[in-house]
Image 1 (cartoon, helix red, strand yellow):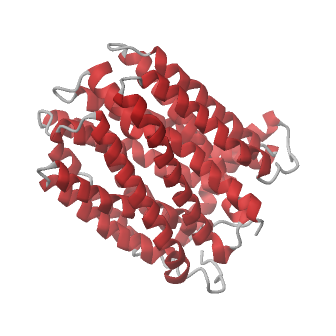
Image 2: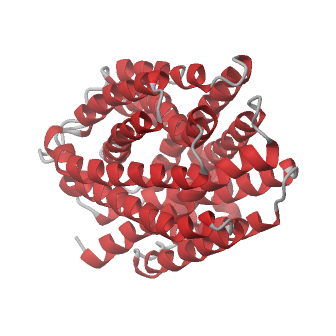
Length: 412
């Protein structure tokens, strides 16, 4: 392995985690409570619409763009373009004022599409830069580095938010996202030789997406894993995307307290990603994901019954350790199921499953909250069904054993 390449790849996770502070805490809370108003759950519903729209766009475009990246040799250039799109629209957050619901919705969706879309091409580098027996560890290192980035983002945002300087926080985070992305832009492997021109690559991308879909249907374990991932990742994304609103609305967390809460989650996730990186290779990603789904179910049950801010901090630690481990193990699991040379388009479908699933969860959460008169305890409890379905589907996957062992021949 090339250490400089691995470090640059991990550092991109550090960079985009600065952005993650915004939808996870600051911008989510500001949009729900100040831009829309959330007394009767309207803010949570509009935020659910924004997240669902983002994930739908990414889900629809990711398989085609992944195939285009492979055919036209554009993986790195698309990574750069999506990152710049996100950075640019974060800067436009400063133009959104209370009552500008639609404009706030638009800049949220476009900035989030840039962030989530870029991750498709970032993930596709994993099988190229790390041998199979190290992919679990490298994936864990990437997520762990990302959680450190979130902590630095909080350190940057907290003093500005406490002074009410939210616009300054938005601009500083955008600048940090761009700055720390530069090593990946320069040091990740260069784009391969284009096999087709851009237009032909786009047309081939549509055809290749269909062929990839058919190929996945023919690969039993890949098909079963992605179906399981579709459900449990929806639950994880929904819990992450709606947690700040839940804490603010249900338990009365202020912005400063939410930032501290997010910091606790990131430290816990950092610990989870590091602690489970080695076991993911030794035990196998399937076993690690299964254990984490049990843990996430415990998180949801605990959140339903929590009454105090202190209790919610304890739940946040449990959620954080589970978040770091399940995300890293899932990415490592997928990397073991991809035929060599087809990383971008297969990770495009991996993203499709994760993001299209994330269309469903926030909408369920938002509508349940509105139907319950703004009671978000009932809404958060509904998420557990997604973990249970994902766990049962995962049991049918026969792959996902220890990656330190010689790879076995894939079964159709």
